[in-house]
Image 1 (spheres, rainbow, N blue to C red):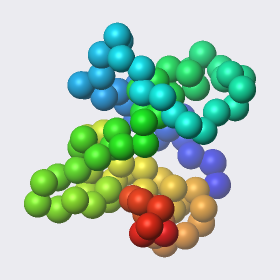
Image 2 (image 1 turned 90 degrees about the vertical axis):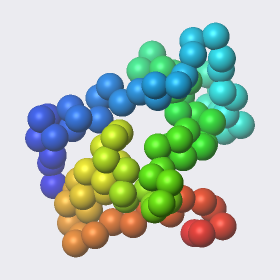
Image 3 (image 1 turned 90 degrees about the horizontal axis):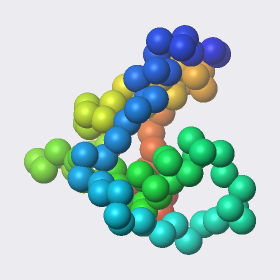
Image 4 (image 1 turned 180 degrees about the horizontal axis):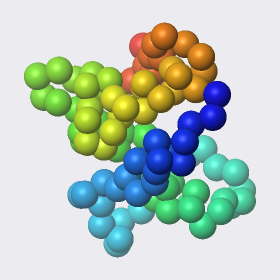
Amino acid sequence: MVLSKDRLRRYLNVKREYSEDKYINVNPIQRGGVLSKEARLALLEWGDGYSICDFCPPQTPRLDKITRPPIRDFYQDLAEFLGMDEARVVTRCREA
């Protein structure tokens, strides 16, 4: 399954509105510094492991309900890419 560039483009510039350039979230999982510029920027933006929690709807703390950034759409695209009816991604390692 190949997703169109149009569909993939919606994930291109997803940013955390609350991040500040002067703070760096340290990720304990490292690859010895072998990262592309794009991967490094994504790591600084999302690498703390809890970043997406900033977007959970308060009454329904479920990842598949988040529309901004387009997490809900990502689940649908992931399922289609994998050739499945539905894809479920757990929110915590204990849940897995």
